[in-house]
Amino acid sequence: MRTSVPAAIAALALALPVVLLEQSPALAASVFVETNPSTVPSGDELAIRASCDDNLKPATVTVEPIGTITVSPSYGFLTATTRVPPATDPGDYPVRLKCPDGKTAESTLHVVVKVEPAHGPATGGGGTAPGSSAPTIIGGGLVAMAAGVALGVVAVRRRRLG
Image 1 (tube, rainbow, N blue to C red):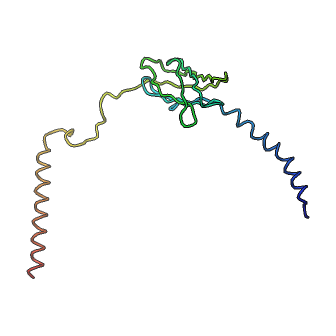
Image 2: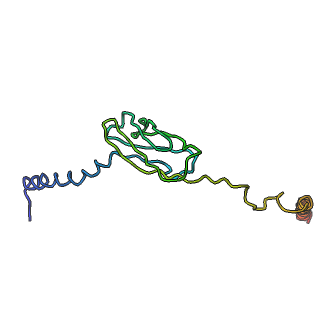
Image 3: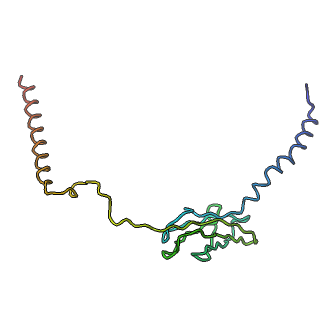
């Protein structure tokens, strides 16, 4: 079955609005705010990335334990870096973006308790072993290496002489 060129153009013209309508939800998602990481211990650094319809103008982000932060244009997004105050209680905090044109977006920041280990793990590592056997082990290793070198020299000399 052959299709004429005007019929193909008409079919394309009818399909174009459907394609454009299917892409409209993506335009609604162009306003957003996110934190990296989304879960952070109190006292740690936090990066904020946001987007408005116009990412050439700064916008404001409000985070309850931190306050209001200005996010500035950088590589096509609005970004800022801040630190969660060390005295922040664990919990979920709203992150609210307000664009210059009045549009808003929201996400959540999860703050957890910062846990500092009392000491490092007991993994062995040389001087942490009980007793004072380290000098004996080091001396024995050096004697074994010297014996290996001496045997190697004797073996090479025997091959050359014989």
